[in-house]
Length: 206
Ligand code: ADP
Image 1 (cartoon, rainbow, N blue to C red):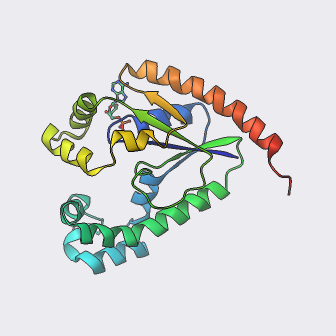
Image 2: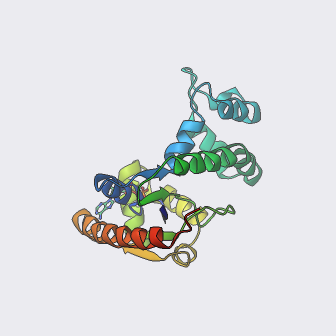
């Protein structure tokens, strides 16, 4: 199976693009969804996060208080590294487990922080969703109801656009309408379907 990594900065349009692939029948393995699942109430990772950062990171209903946790790790490199050491191995293993269960010609693996990660993911190609900084700020602050200043801090904490683009086999420019984004994804779907067939015919049979 051809595995296509999908990445991009915050608010670039990864989820919107992934949703279109999903509508086209392509399975999506999403690191963000997995990251939320691994810290669900009762899961061992949540217990470890509480042991590391204290009860203040859980709300009264026993769920992880993401806002509080974000505050703790955002400006402290050691805390960030500690949180990542708890979560990342689990997220990585779950991505591999989900990939193992798929049998379609190709799939999309959404990894928002692919450019920041030190891990080697089993990807055959990388698709980057890209857009100009000003539009990234505008769309993200509208979506998250946060000031552009706050969003800009997050953007600055992520890899540069150039670094991300250097990983790309394919780039989708998303400064136009959603319809245009969909058209571009539809074209890529054709391309990936063709590539997946070539890929299968050249793959070793045992
Ligand atoms: P990401 O998953 O990369 O953080 P999203 O897919 O959530 O980004 O997109 C960020 C915001 O921008 C969302 O509110 C989404 O609806 C909007 N959006 C995405 N693509 C477009 C587009 N081409 N035109 C207008 N709004 C868009």
